[in-house]
Length: 475
Image 1 (cartoon, one colour):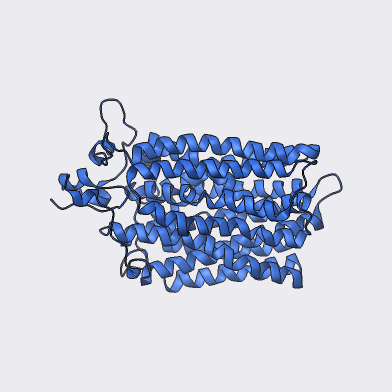
Image 2 (tube, helix red, strand yellow):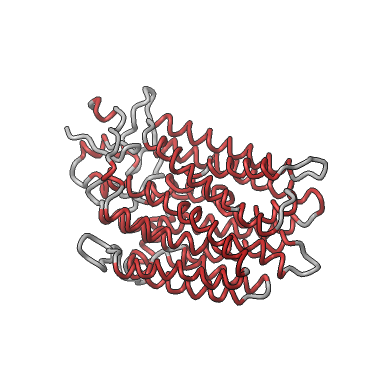
């Protein structure tokens, strides 16, 4: 292998990131992120207004969070095939329309069940936007690995950028009009996304509608499920995403945590939930950029360090909830920022890079990774809603449980990283031809489609394909 394959990638040019395709996908996903941000900001006000005398506001919020994550997990499971088979553009149009309807229903809710079910509808249809965006990028950049990596990086930014920019606006409108009208008007974000999908998004170059997968038949569904669920490496990432998802969905409960332990009002607590999105945005923008430029061994170490830092911040939040600790809202916000800013790479970039290797099952792979995570976090948050109600130490038990889940995710993610970014004793990248097939004692990578990126018949390129740069070496 030549030294060029071992060297760090050259600095990407701005045009690699800010081209027409990436900007369209970025802006479309921003509207999706803004749509789902509304329930997050409003939940503290809703809990204060609607919770029953027999339950606390935090318990009400945790129940709604459980419904929301359940909606996402069902969407990932049931809609995972749709983007591949029906076409990403058509799927996005349908989902934006249904999200707008979900926000209208949300504005009419009057119980935890009705609010939670409306939130589940919003999350159900929002769940397809990430895999659909990934499908479009992978299709347009089929022969441009560097462009694919740049597109994934910008897509990762769009999720948190949409939340960060919309949350202050939603909080401001809520202070003026109340949560019901704010939820109703937030449907406008989904309408903007609908218009973008109709008039600007294309499935493939010069083709508005170009489904990448097979038609939905029992045979094709079973074949796709085997390709994804039969892959051991996929299960490592799906398992790791559970703890990552607990941090990602913590924005649904931190508002109640701030109001109960930080001494701030409900409206202020709801506004402060934006720190979760700011943390993830910072993580992808700063740490994500650093991550893509690292060598393979450094990638694995970096992921471990990020996990450890996030775990310490979670435990810090639990400590601040103790009744004998004089808590500061500023310290709580700082620890929340720390726990989220150290999780963006693991949550967004690592799973998407694995999904890009799954050929015509890219969307299904991405959907099911998040589906497993959200189904699990839905159950966990529902259980934690009961834990939090257990007196003065409820939040301590709750955050400790989150920390334990993240520890398990760290173990699984490290095992994946050591395989995906495998190195030999000298620190050289492992041969991807081994990972793509089955060696003498490990068939973990069987079923992944590395030839989608590096070509079917160029064995030399396949052997020297570097996973940290998505580039190939010409012999």
